[in-house]
Length: 389
Image (cartoon, rainbow, N blue to C red; front, side, top):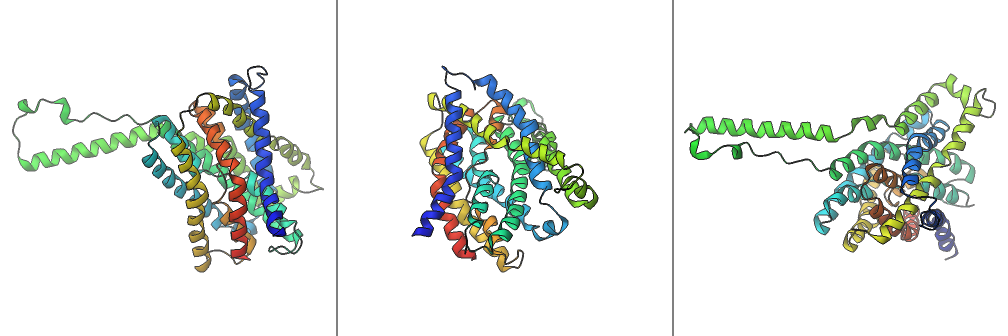
């Protein structure tokens, strides 16, 4: 009972921190204060996108990535991708069942697909590692290897968010226009008779033309430039520095000649999570005044993220272990499992702000998901630790 209470306090700490910062952002957005109005949130979003997020990813990744660690953790990027794909499928089911307004479809899919793979594991895993006699080796080794797992998880989550989820939300927020039917442009009474074989060939050609037009239209909607978003570029640079030993010794370490670069990057990157949380709090004010989000949709997102997705993760991770695709390290398996049980990613607020659609509804979803995260991030980690230890 005492251990369960301690785990509950440990798991609730990051959730409470985020909720407190959200309240501060909410207060700053009040009309009487007006420190975080709509224009201010847009400017802050740009700073997060171009400065804070790349600094956070670069500083965390370059400090932990090596060739040996990448070989050991090869399944991590695959597992994170599974969380996004399965979450997208569950989000689409929520859309089909609850029938939300069309401009909120991208937000719902994004909330179900993109999880908070940075803030939550970054606090939960080290806190659990500090426990003496815990299930994950001695505290020092647990801290060392656990941070490596969490940093790669955070990096892959950020990359997938700004490539996969960003473009899905972009397409769904601006639906593809349905192309008019070719046959509808003609008066069938004036079309000369043709053979059935020719008619079949024309229909096949017409269908192929429609498919090509849809592909072209889809490619125009998808912003391929986000594949090279600032956060993605920072991750690539960090991987190069981490894998090339001379560069790593030049920048990383206490006695590194250019170690001040790493320290400065870390200092700037630490502002990413508070800034994103303040934006969510500021958007929450608008959401409470006028939100088009139905209760059934919110419940659907909660069920998808906190029940169906973790159950799916159990089958995937345990199946990978049975097939010898991952090591028997209980801490590594725990991090893989926890990726399926976290609340939606904080950068969804940034994405909706960039699109100018669904900001208030995003804040409402964030409020409910993070309010209930203390329960989810206590129950599921407890079960996961019992399962892998």
